[in-house]
Length: 245
Length: 255
Image (tube, rainbow over all chains, first blue to last red):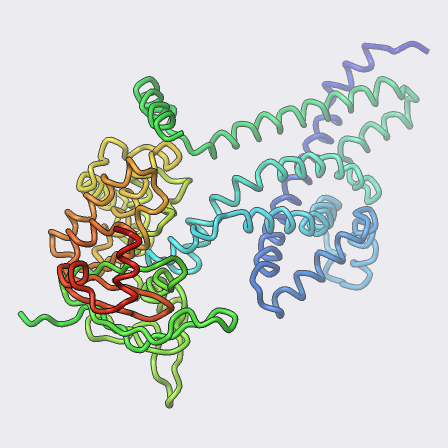
């Protein structure tokens, strides 16, 4: 059996694959948002220096770093609805279960990324914010977070890409994301190479687009004014730098 | 007008891990007075400024700003430190300039100056920008407004930091060795800004190693050592006729 380009290209543009890819990215986006929010509060708890906040945060990270994501998904989809009747309703779809499940696991990892980003912000920064009379919340929001985000951005990009791939685990709870779509097609046609190759292309495109987006985002955090008056500014700045060194 | 003390410090004590850094510091700063604080490294000068800026709580003692006690209050015979929220409000009255500038690196110069106005005083973006530009003009940096701190020299950064504190219109300005982190050729521009500020009648305390500056600009000079004030007086008396051995020794090293 030879590689049949026609089958390959037909799958590449098939609605099933497009829908599968959209589901994969969708799960990754929702779980990353959830993970960032939970991870942020865990990181705040762990850096707070208060035992009653550090304890639970520590416990959370310990628990979800230890449990395989696959097991969490199975628990989300199979065990929890047995225990909690409300989760037997229609709204609790495989998409919701997968996003929340992966989000809970990912939060443990995001909390470590965010924690180290928060710690990397110079002590003088919150000090200067407080000296201006800013409230603790404003100091965090306007001074510390913008600087921590810059540090957290590259590893978070990594995690996002990981989540796109981890979304394939959701096949066990019958979410028809990208890899499941390929697998279903293979089971019917036995054209392994063509169906898997189409999946490869999708993953490559998704991750490439994400990398470009990440690069654009990181540029926004470059903190230079090089777009304004390039020549004169660059010369003046360079002059200063030379003068100092 | 009576010369009422803007800032009063009463018997301030501070320990770090059992080390007494401040051992009962007491002084007044009158309105419009420029107080220079000299002293060797580790003598507690910077700690004293941080306490006055309400960035750290004192172990004991009181700080009064314009006759009102700040930072702590008495509660049934005990000293109670105010919560961070209330401290934040009181800090608006006190301008602080740090040795290492501590500009916000993610904001342009003008945005650094605006942040206090918009997020503390609740002034509109438009109005805050106008005030910030005005203040940058006063420190001679209006043409650097849209530059980020990493694109400014140390001297320029410190001038932005002064503008940032000044724009909130504080009752007193505290300078913590404002030129110690600067290359020698950049010290002058910062001292000049501080000197001009002194001429406008701003009440200030300047912790510094710049003896000549202290002599020229201050109307009271203080020597700090071992967590206490050793000597304090008018600059002529302090420099030309010091009373304490410790002061004589200190001056012989820095002159």
